[in-house]
Length: 387
Image 1 (cartoon, helix red, strand yellow):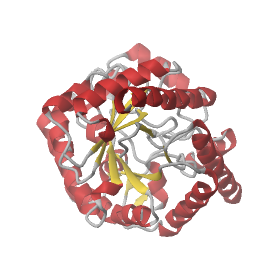
Image 2 (cartoon, helix red, strand yellow; image 1 turned 180 degrees about the vertical axis):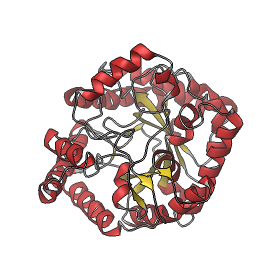
Image 3 (cartoon, one colour; image 1 turned 45 degrees about the vertical axis):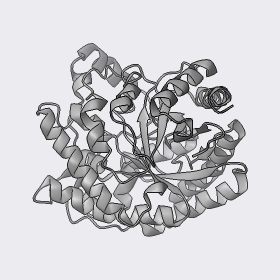
Image 4 (cartoon, one colour; image 1 turned 90 degrees about the horizontal axis):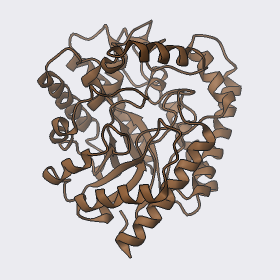
């Protein structure tokens, strides 16, 4: 929190160098790659992306998820019991528009990328955390890059997937119930969450499942069934965070980071009361995209807890339009008015720019210009709101 200006951040993933994307893509397709070359490219990319964030002026920076092929599927190497070949339910909004679906399929087939809907594993055995060595190395890399390249940054943050998004993407073929599966994942990820915070980072839980799955896994089921799912995930997440101070955690919820109709998205009004049960002091919601830009108003009737900060998405991550800084400032000011205190508002992007390697719709040079517009817009809003 800052009572002097609006701080800036983003949702975690940033464009990866083409060489790194190519290596991740080939490995995700089952091809063998030079693991030493991949590791070296990852190390170099982290240093580059941290320096780039600070050069632009981002206050709360990340490692850009440069050493992960996906915001969630990196866990296939950190958890036991995951393997084989799974599948994923279709997205209801995409299925509703066959011509759009056809065009999107052609577009995705033409680029090297790691998919969160294809080449998926499944749960075939007991889930345990086996990735501590890899996680420790990732934390050490970011620590070194932050110390060397992040002078002036307010704080570093580190992302980790929610139990619910992994359970949604990686089909359960081992546990007797979905609830048991969620609980097993949460128990394993407790190690990851505590390790991240123990290394001095703020923790961002990436939980698109808490909104997205309404039009995927629960597309043909009553809203009450989906709300029960959100309740189950939040309860499991709270158990996994039992030893983590809530002021160190922010929860990022979205409706899927893809360009699409999104006219099947669940309203924020239907899920916010459940999201507010999460034991976190940061709630991160997207308000820049044209489907949810109005929903900050929901906070008027369902305000944040006294200790909470709202990380507000004010930059869209699936369009190459570069937001004007005045537009960004206007968005921040409207949201701060509803929250009631600009010190409890942080400006961010709606989601990550490259949530799976190569899947980003925004060109790399445009990404950095959009983040520059975020920083400048926050400066304008700060002058108006904080004096």
